[in-house]
Amino acid sequence: LGMELSGEIDEVGSAVTAFEKGDEVFCSTGMHLGAYAEYVCLPEDNPLVRKPVNMTHEEAATVPNGATTALVILRKAQVEPGQKVLIYGASGSVGTFAVQMARNLGARVTGVCSGKNLELVRSLGAEKVIDYTVSDFTENGETYDVIFDAVGKLSRSKVKRSLTKDARYLNVLTDSGISMNLDIADLELVRDQIEARKLKTVIDRIYRLEDIVEAHRYVDTGHKRGNVAVIVT
Image: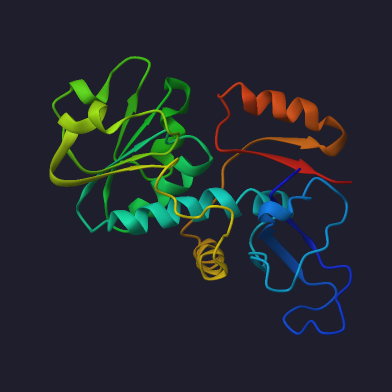
């Protein structure tokens, strides 16, 4: 198991030219899996790039899938400066990245999450925050140019009344377009944004590898903030 990681290259094959022993990298392993281990062997053309210099391995390991998913969907949404963008599930792995990216594009961001995460989402750049346990955003009369369901719990029929005339509704389950093949250029773009301090990851908890069962149990509660990392020591 395991589809994303950060670590140091221990050995390279004789034909490898892009990397050297000792390089610090992060990546998505896709359907190769294998990230829950001390070592993993990957082809040179895997979505593998040098780790952001301003992140620890624990931080970098949480980035590849969540950040690139947010990037691809917001690109599809064609977000423009000044547009009103609502991120549903704004405190999750994809949502925390989406809030920051939409803000960086100049959008006016509204984040929807639970009450305990309102300040977190606001700190990531949301102009407004809505506690979904208290208020249904589809009932407040507000309309948005883009609605991005980052947790896959809404339907177009549910949000229709909250969309402007030419608005776009995107769902993480159907609109990522990533499948299991992450684009290297997208991961490099995310890395550059991180190094420019325009993007950061949110880590709720860090577990040791021997406690990975508990890590999965916690994630399965559906209440994590941002990401959960697992360290191999």
